[in-house]
Length: 557
Image (tube, rainbow, N blue to C red; front, side):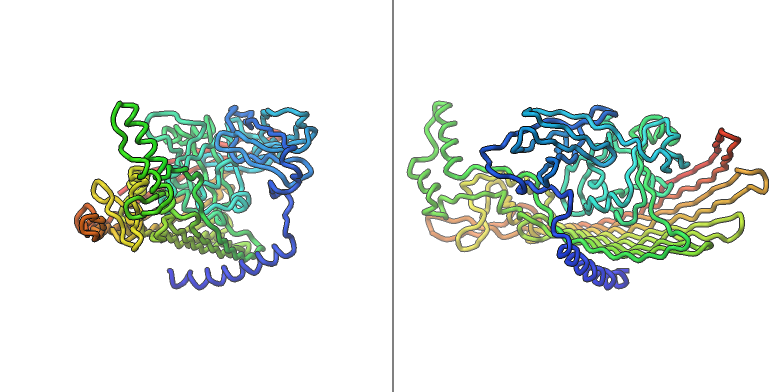
């Protein structure tokens, strides 16, 4: 599959870059793009305006909402709690608040420094059809709480992890990013907060089948995502206790043929970088602690001066382990090619997607690659019978240093700034308590963890029209068989580290803690689901009747 997809991705990259350059040359300043440097004259004239943007639905803060100064490109966005802060140069300026799924609101500043606003959910498009449970309804017919976002909106947000793209675009949906390692983002999803002490994750339904791996989906493959809350999710029973996320992928349409190529190149950066103490500051602080306990200082004034001026980096270094362990930017690339179309009898949507994300480590060791192929085919084989065949194949390859990110970060804060990461001659330093030097731990020098996941998701469905029995009667059924084959290899090996011996003026070689080892594991999981539904939908004058009875069986091996 890699041999088949990779040439397509390369062509996609070339075409995408050409299109991007063309767009930049013809439209260098797209309207609506916030630019904090436009329209600012004298910084002394700034008026700092802050506040919170909340939703009328649940009074929760809206993260990622846009706050713009009307008539300019100056603006900002709200944080994860819905808070914002913006500088204006005119006390009579007007702030424009907007977010996907909400009505836009304009508020005059009138010299105020605090402005809290509440955004109304959009009531437009009441005739828009959304997926609710096992059926579709128009928005105007909904009695439960349902929020939805189109695939086009998700593509514009542009995140390599689809889950993160939902941040700020769904009312009541909270996304917590607790990871960051390529291929293992550890993103938590909560609908309207935490409901239990156990698992608070919502049920994820992809094309009618409960599945995991929402973040691995390609945004270009998504037609629509709906979030079901409260009574609207009750059809799924106890599984819907924490809400339901319903994903509908794209399908072909009669008479329409379209080929799409996309290439996205970007970088990932650390959100917050802590400011670490320098060695002379740390030594001064330790002396203050000693004096506070009535003990003698650990460092002389001469020592502190050497730490400050760096005159002897061997015995008096100044090390910021954080900046030496992580790099400022890590590149990522994503290429997608898709084709959709069909006739009255056969429609298809075919897509290939490639994603590569590099680690944030300064060693540049570690990366995650994902290859994905999707095929959705619908065929009309009889006047009353339609069938569908969906196949999604995904290959995930991850190779990271064998030390976990939590262990590396622990060592970043555990080691003292008076310890070197490397000596001036380039030899790595043996830090205290087993030589946990994070600048070495973040590389393949101490081993690696290599994982390969092969995911195959299939679905065969039929839609039988029973109008020949009675108008509005129909039967729908499908069977889904999913395979997840995982192979993991963990290689651990000690690395040579060194410690300067002032007596011999030589560097003694020492090995890091741990023994050389190799561990392998293989996991194979198969999920089966079978569903059949008899439905009746009909209209009598101004009245509509819709009901169904269904049987569903699932098993995991």
